[in-house]
Image (cartoon, rainbow, N blue to C red; front, side):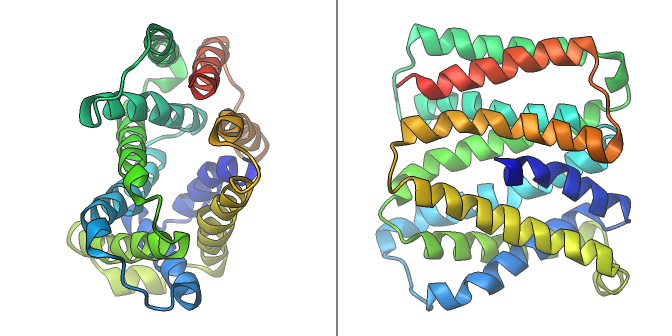
Length: 273
């Protein structure tokens, strides 16, 4: 969870070094793809997985990371962005209800409503006056992550290396094209990336995208999803602490109140079966 939480301040540091946000997301996914090639061994997934695999890869490998970087790029403070990412759980439950016809109990409805109320309280924080565009992209990031989780349920029988390598491949290629047409001067932008920024991008790819996820998959061998998932509520706490250490961001009372409501709501959403 420390690694997951560190993803946001580390990405912001790279963006502050003038790395274009969409290009940075593309390079991150390129590194994930390259590192996983030896584990992939060029296995082609069965036809029954292809549709869900492509859809998952677009949501997770493209939309989640591009919206994450855009939210940080358009924000002067990042703690609300970290907290907004917690909406992925309510969005995922709502998406499962609509797309998979899963039943949502009244307790879950109350907790979903409570999570959105917490975010609504944070919107009144005067420090967010110039950060609403960033929060909008953070909401799209959370929605994309929630949708990705819905499609991931249809990929449980797929090897983890295959899932992640396709996610990296789709993310790299699609984001590179988007960066070329929107940000332009792709080769020049890559050549201007400093060694410090490359270290930060490698950190995101290796420590966060690979290390943190592999550690979670390792835990799934010994513990149930119900025991592991509530720990996801910890990563915004670590992220906010790191934001204070790195960027000297001091949370306001409104942010603390809204944050407690959001994190508590998501924690109990993960606990309820």
